[in-house]
Image (cartoon, rainbow, N blue to C red; front, side, top):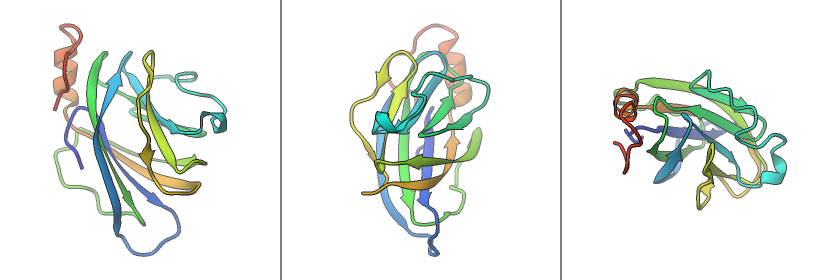
Length: 161
């Protein structure tokens, strides 16, 4: 899992028995603004309430139909995201995580797209599988203290890690 200002995402399909990593993607650069960003089904038409509608910013990870909202410790910066897809629940990744949370997401397209609050969708897709499914998600994050401190002095230019 990536250690950076943004979460690393461990995702797996439900209903399988052996813990085996199927793929690792990233790191991706994610533009964070207004303390938030989301992972949303790539097929926006399948998301009843697209991000940032309903983004409350109260918890580190909040699940909504077709999307996962993430709260950052910093207002405006670039976070690093690494995604690992597993066939069943893996062990908690080693590392010094400042935050962690779990949720589920129904994804009709089998891929996600990162989105900023004001900047909108990031380029490219994050592949989960070639089909729709319900995914259990574990998000872990490091660097939150650093990004909080740096963004108190203005916009951070470049990626924090």
